[in-house]
Length: 292
Image (cartoon, helix red, strand yellow):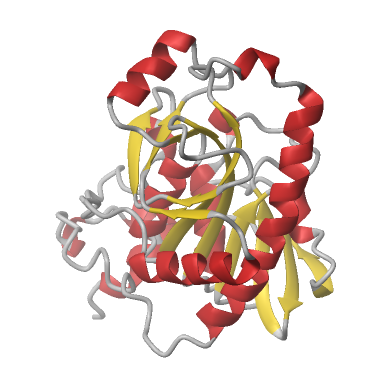
């Protein structure tokens, strides 16, 4: 299978970048089923990247239907060490205006129906990752530098609250999240970040603000046309940021700091690993199984 060092998860506007050259599709099967769609493999300034449309082409999957484990495991099978995740979000604070970019460094989980898609562990192999700092700070630095280079108004740091969806928040919920000190709200990135850490892949989020959440007094005046206008502007800016960020990641001299993230996280002794589970997780735990 073709090996790719950098993966990008996002929407269709990202793999249809005019700068993406030598584009081809690659279907990847995993022990957790099929990913959201076929991967789009291509080159940005001679750097090979693997794009995965999070919701499938045509936006066919709700956030709760996403095959998170298959998506991240497929990245692992491709040899990905760095994931740049691009996601539209609502703003919970006035300082994050529509078309601004946010690079969050924390997550807060409000999902309820995704326990089976939130970890690779279980079925006889128990692991507890360290997740106090859920994103890669080095990738955050790179994204911030690339946003500055692209001239995008960017906010470094902040908390992304991940809700279940697919409906948006009630006004009461939105106001509570603000009182909790949350910064932006979305429906997808928490599970991606957890699974990437278990897969020993560095992960960071580029959050694209499309609107103020419903707490904002003028929220009801926002039209679909306005949101689409913001989305289109965000997508083009994100394309420019990603092109620059991919170049910076490829030129990086330091290794992936999470390449041994689960070395001390697996509580089950290898001699007690069920053979079926060990085989299923081989791309992740295989290197920690003693050779006979």
